[in-house]
Length: 200
Length: 200
Image 1 (cartoon, chains in turn blue, red):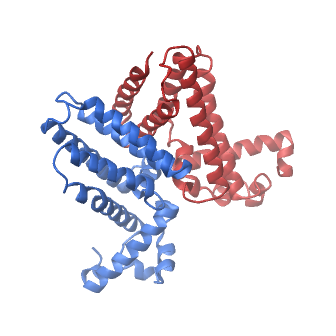
Image 2 (image 1 turned 120 degrees about the vertical axis):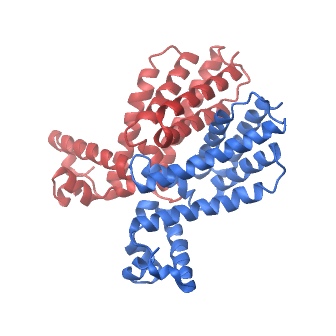
Image 3 (image 1 turned 180 degrees about the vertical axis):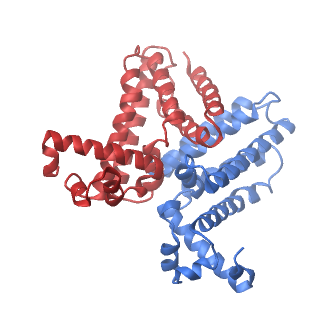
């Protein structure tokens, strides 16, 4: 961590840079982010920004971490307050679909996945880390709904998590190009069909 | 069309610029494409490139058109040689999944969708045009399989096309981050389940 971040004021400045960078990424993608553009946007010198982030990649990674954090707070933290089992699983799915349809500018993690999936390096590694974790959380929620006897014991949790994730991607795509209402209606029917097929 | 493209040699040069631009887009996305980078890449002056494309946006649109053309030739042209009905529908799906899993650098149309879905303008309009057409072609192929009595008469073609497209997106995502074999195995099971639920 660069020295400037070690003080309270430094940490606040760092957070405000990340907030602004997050807005830029949602509009222009991670490739649209540079130390120069962010410095201009927050009214700092480039060396001022470099005092908080050693490189453009450090800044991009910080935005990726912030995006994962925001997703966790919006989707998982409230869903984990729901009862274990199918109720919690459906809360995760519904909140994820809302995020996918409505997050202004689109989901930064999906943007990073498209931008870096074919480019080996630290950013791709971080995307793989977060997307692996997200899929594992989905699998874990499905297994809980099996444990509570709400889903059948022979439910293929990995397969169902893949199918859920597919719906999330389609909502992200359709909501932005064709409109959120139609996308959410389609997703609701897909989700019901998948769940009904696995009900105990 | 700028004057330079009106001759055979001009058209060949234009095509070679688009080919190179297509490679750049697959690696860096549409935002990574500029008249400057493409001029350097093909060894022409910027004004030489401008003689073929009046603006950066014209070049981006030409790459989008080339991508749609390439997808049509890879997926739909061979699939349309298959027997009308379920055989043709499955050929379209299988070829699309292969494209999504294996197209080097990723599908440019999906990259453009992520980059421009929230930015009103000519590029977004073109993406909406192509994605609307693609979904219509899927719906049409599903309806043919209903007409041939291979899928049930009450099959919701729009819903099934949404579900098919969701699988395509998930394969594109998973193949690049987690590996093609697992992604294709999941997609195959999802596809079978969807088709089996609609079989007449």
